[in-house]
Length: 104
Image (tube, rainbow, N blue to C red):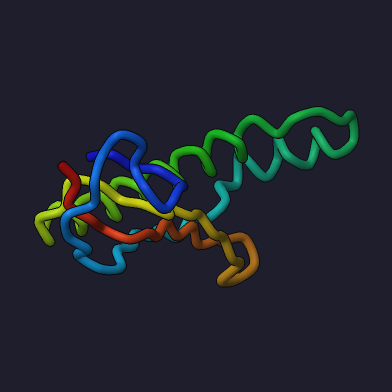
């Protein structure tokens, strides 16, 4: 599956537009991560536990979007975007979305 943030796939022609596809996940913080994050806010620096959690969440959302595109018969996703929102204290939603297309 080709996934790009541009409207076209360089060197490929879009033959068919399959439609909007998306994938999302809601991730919550872990108590152990919160303790480490609290310490990091005192001494400064990257909160690696949260970085890893959000990287994993982004990959899950992209994978789910890709699966939806495959079900539509697409072999590429153009104009892919990522968004995040807080759904409750301590939990965030990550959503990946784009346009599923068939390219040659």
